[in-house]
Image 1: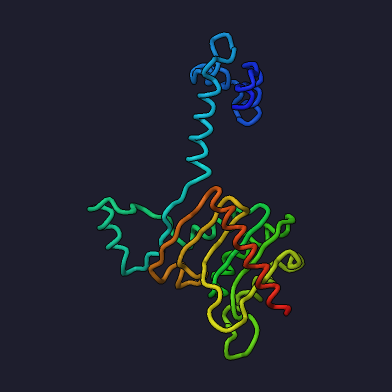
Image 2 (image 1 turned 90 degrees about the vertical axis):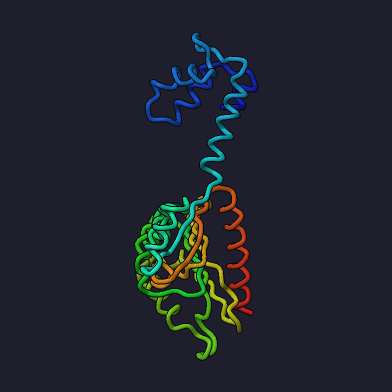
Length: 248
């Protein structure tokens, strides 16, 4: 829209562009007149490029770049959180970790990535429907974790059971489910991420376990926008390196 106005495009072209993206097209012209983008005759005003650029910037700030606080609040801390919120204007009603992670996973339309050094079958079971739906529609998914193979002394049976559960749950779609594991000495992988496509992601301290999502005090954020795309590139690099190391 901004480029049309800047190039001297007619008011009709601006109206048509907006109308193609909204439900109630009958309100477009009057809304643009009210906003100063069009005059009463439906012609582009001189200030139209400025007003449209300002609108674009506000939408970008509100939608593309935002984050929300996400907490796991165990029972012993709930009253303390409520008291802090009441008395000191604290985080108010923060998003819940478990609910947020499930919501992020369910929103994926093309790609879902989960990353955690510690997984648990019971929580992965809660995410399995999102994986199954995504993969059945032709999407792709990646799991980044650790200790799935290698010496028995370093192998994580809990992680292996969680991954096996997910592979069984997605069934015939498992060819679009990629598993990346750090199997060398040390912790190796420590970040906790659930990312849908390249537009929404949970990043925080909570492992994808009952403890991380309900039993322990944890803190994280729900990210939207360009930072998620940067995170996606980083996760891709990690996954590629883990795959390379597993076959050398």
